[in-house]
Image 1 (cartoon, helix red, strand yellow):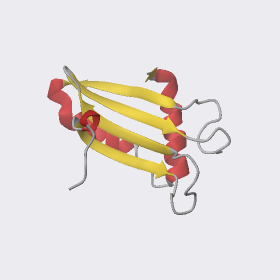
Image 2 (spheres, rainbow, N blue to C red):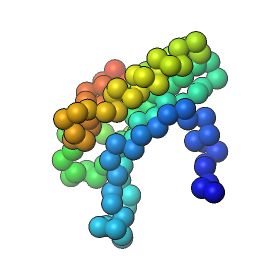
Image 3 (cartoon, rainbow, N blue to C red):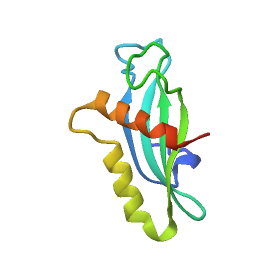
Image 4 (cartoon, one colour):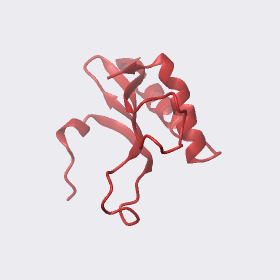
Length: 112
């Protein structure tokens, strides 16, 4: 059985868009880009977690690492929240295009 952190038990959908391959870089820090939808007290929140190296080259150079609240949905809009999270976390053009798309949402987001 895999351990699920207490903070992740309220996640209704999540996707790791990109992460450091531990087999290729066993001694380096873990870096990743993740989108998840979680249940909050009064609704559902879609989060973008950006943890890239400073000189990574992915995404927009003006966007800093951090946790960004991209959008909030009311309690009655659970399916819309999940659908929106899925749409912003996937791009047929690939991972780099997905990260750029997520970075473009950051100016309208709340950084935590």
